[in-house]
Image (cartoon, helix red, strand yellow):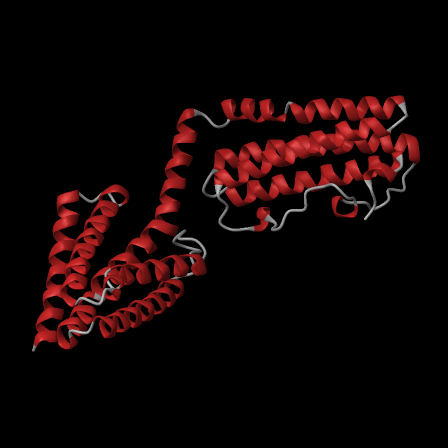
Length: 319
């Protein structure tokens, strides 16, 4: 890798051309990734991509007048000091709107810094003038995005995109997490309390509870991941949904299993019952908050189901 200070004026211009070309393609990638779910924001990134193309044309015209047609290949990764992105966000699907906007802001900041630094190392007056002009343009890109947002991202368009983003968050994270938490909290009640009242051994109950929780987590994780690939339902990447569902299933079962680390059987059991009540209340609140289910209705459904499973475990364990 070359140091920036060692670059010639020809290499600086070539690097600037390469940067503008890459940035325009990144913005175009953002636009394509957002177009289906966030069409107004996609149009903003289309406009920003067109702006980068215009910058490239300005730079290449200057380069050609100074150095001719040959354009050496020099890129960000060939020069020390640039931010090296750990993942190509513009290729990811589905794209998160907030993450994309933050990424774009960092790109514009880096571009401005590059042009400011480049003006310090160039001696040609016309080149320095162009680089200074581009630095000012990059500094104003936040205002450009704001102006574009005012004309393209109208209040109604932004509200629609915010609702789409909320719905995607529900489908990709809340729904699989809630399914896992419900399954882990309710389905493990029977084996845990059956083991407790059958053995009156807190350690053996703990082992049964951990086995049931981890096993249920693995099973639910694979079931959720294999249920669909998200291409038609918009539910996102299967492995993310499977991971969320599996982890929440395990957490739901581990919650009322951990009290059985207490040696005293009745103290552990009473604490486990309290934890179960908290888990069922939390599930009811999540359904009320995110799934538009009336709280009393959600609580009734969860409490009745959980109570029946809990009683079944105690009856089976005591028989």
